[in-house]
Amino acid sequence: MPDRSAVGFGRRVTDGLDGSPPGDDKRPWPAGATRLDDELAASLLPERPVRGHKGTFGKLLVLAGSLDYAGAGLLVCRAAGRSGAGLVTLAVPESLQPLFAAKVVEATTMGLPEDDVEEIDPEPALARILDHEHDALVVGPGLRPGLSTAELVRQLIVPPAEDPPPILLDAEALRSLATMDGWWSGERRPAVLTPHAGEFARLRAGSGIDPASDGDLVEDDDARVAAARDAASTWHQVVVLKGARTVIAAPDGEVSIAPFENPALATGGTGDVLAGAIGALLAQGLAPYAAARLGVYLHGTAGDGIRERFGDAGVIAWDLPDGLAIARKRLAGMAERRQQSKGLGFGSRERVAATGVSPPPTDPTSRA
Image (cartoon, rainbow, N blue to C red; front, side, top):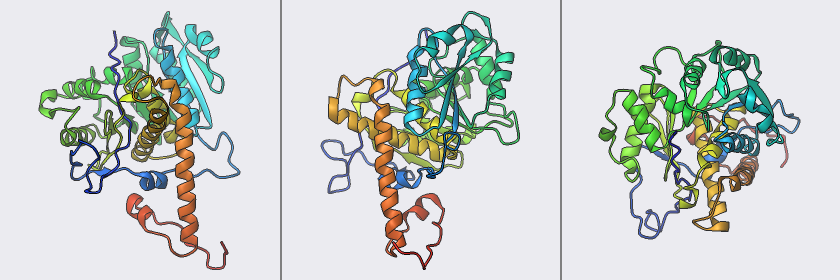
């Protein structure tokens, strides 16, 4: 039985007057890590040109779901749509395609060849995947465990072309990686890995690291930052260590922390929503680290809104995707107002500091 442990990651912690979180939580923020906030998240939003069309805003291919975990694939697709992806395709074993086609509305479906009922045949399935036009991949949520799945994951992480689409690996894809010796060695497709603490421990063990040496990856934020940073450097990929105060680590050592702690999100399927959000942002052209940071922040903000409505208990994953769109709209409004203020001559330099990208020069002949 696959381990699908629920993880709580949400509620934004607002600083008190002394710079510490309110209430009884006086835990310091780890040194050397960037704390995500509204302004930084807004600076990461991909452009949304007014003359864009569904092809402009990214094509996401999702390999997720099985007979036992059909909801995982549906949640990824719904979250991807609510996060701005233009086209979403759900790829499932051919025998299950009629089931999923009856459930999805906006997404399309694609059947993958099987060598047994629900067992994907890796070689022809890979050929069909590579033949399908897409800008990013999400692989893993709800997939059926087995050697066929592991082999397909092994082949998918190898870049099929000079500039391959990025891939997000979650759930069963991560468990598959944990069984492969040196999976990170050699040329690999750019990826975002999204493990919870249990999946992270299995990946570390598969990499020859004693998980106990990482310390407490649930309560100790310093340990979480150190472990995620080391893993991202070792694996040469972006690592999202889920949980309260989710940690996002880049291969170059940069680390960000999301300021959310939300027990309402400790329910099955919320991680699938996060996978869809990050996957959609990858498809829209964001680099893996930027997509991971923005996706985590949108997810946490959506969780805040749902918690305000339902409280700490009773939230289900299907409640979350609408909140992603609402959160993105709010951040887009902030970004637009900031850009307008820069045009008037009294903007700030936060975007340059956060992203390293200077804004385009303002036309001195234009009028606000």
